[in-house]
Image 1 (tube, rainbow, N blue to C red):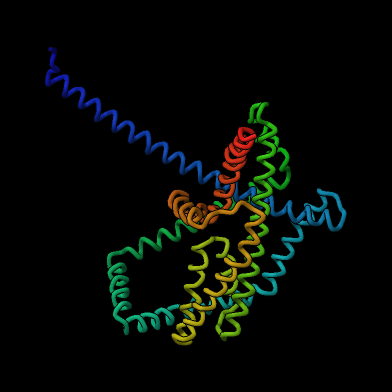
Image 2: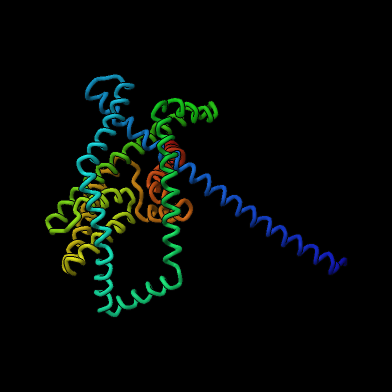
Length: 349
């Protein structure tokens, strides 16, 4: 019986090592290309969402005022620009002073929070951990990462605005382009899918805008009743961060609770209770109404999607996780689930 020589075994082992290394390298390259491509696709999606918003406003104007679509689109863009400009004209100065006041008060607020924590056993452990992190340089690296990511986001916003301008100008061109990529046999299905995804995204935008105003107004009213400072700033922060499900409200809570601690522990607890109450109302009343008009995304799936996309694509991944998951669920429902249900009904008949 022929036996393998030590030299051939050694060669075989080397080949396996090189093969394994090659596969790992290929996987790393694929992962890098996927993350880069995902970032690009998310910017395209963000531009498309801006375009859908303006076209939805134009459709509303066409329906109510009976004017042509091109004129309605121009009026839609101009009207939104005027509203934003007027907002910053009337509120900007006050908002700017409140932001300055917040930046001046934060050091004192943090000192008060440290003092309050140091009086409690668990708080002392938290302070020790924070001090060790500062000494090890973790805070410095975090700050550097924050500023580098901020500048990256600003450049991405510029790209999103450019893409949105092109999408707003001629959406049908891109719609036809996408459908032309599909073989003739599947063009009708592609058109239906495109229109369904457009409907889902439009309803998501409507829901998010409603959620922004709902959260901002309710938060501002509640903080005003509690006698909190910087009501306008905190209300806007809460409304804007509501665009990020699950994590956004937690981030918005931090400055509000810190400022509440300046008024006293009881005020901080009242602020915490207010934010919790608002989130309960939103999740039990407004959120179900929004999800009726779009694909219902299970909360656990949304959290997993946010964390996963955040790890891969950062800020844009977390921000756009909901529409991305809604698109995927729409594709699965239309291409697989409904088809399977139809086949089962035919077999049963």
